[in-house]
Figure (cartoon, rainbow, N blue to C red):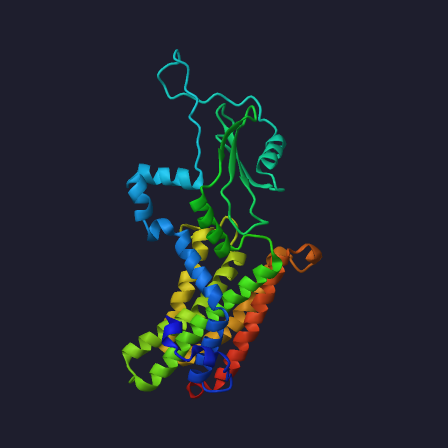
Length: 363
């Protein structure tokens, strides 16, 4: 829709005037990030539709399998490889009481099962997922899934072995149609190991965020000049602020809660995970109420909050995990990357707050 709306999109792509007033500079940045990452935006949107094919195009499977719980289970089994061997039935002479499964005498070698999986899959494939189902019982079995770290397609290759004997019970390979779906899933989720492409995805994902934010800012800035002040405009502006800076504040509050809450914390009856989500929602609601109360000044104040919260999250992580103490050499690269991005976010928010120091005049 943006390509259709912006008739001079390609021409405007080469025009970026960051020192102009907000309506012009935000539109330039919106065009720049939108056009530069257009193939990425298209691929992510298309792959998202393909991933949720059963929700968006239910006729595709209803026409073949029908509807209802059994039909959905059949779709899952045929499409994604759900397998479960029958339970071992008790002997005929056993009393008519709930039977207790017989214990498993011994578990066959998992290494041998992994070697067999490598042989069957070939091409240097490795199992990345091993799970023992019904552990400890005589009818337990082992599931192995093939890794997709070296390929784009998030394959569904699965092998099931008898836990006691190591005998192969079932092999699942996705049908060609599901293979296409899993290729698009791989494009979307980026689970393959390729450092350059993953960084490219990260940069293009940020470009998408900037495109959405600058589009909203441009719309608010242009409408402000032609819309009389009042309660309706105040609500619209507050939603815009909460949807851009407020989301970032809420995310940082979530990260801080993750570092501050004890592992077995119970907050108002919520487990730790639920409490972290509650902190996120409360922080976002607070940012919305703040925007309603402060109006256009909330942009600068929430930018300052981001500039303070982002390095605070880095400090909390270092304090609670010792990531930058004596064990800094063993700190995972992903942790270092997140902390560096948080510091960059703080710098960008601080710069934005500095430019907003004149308040509504700059807007």
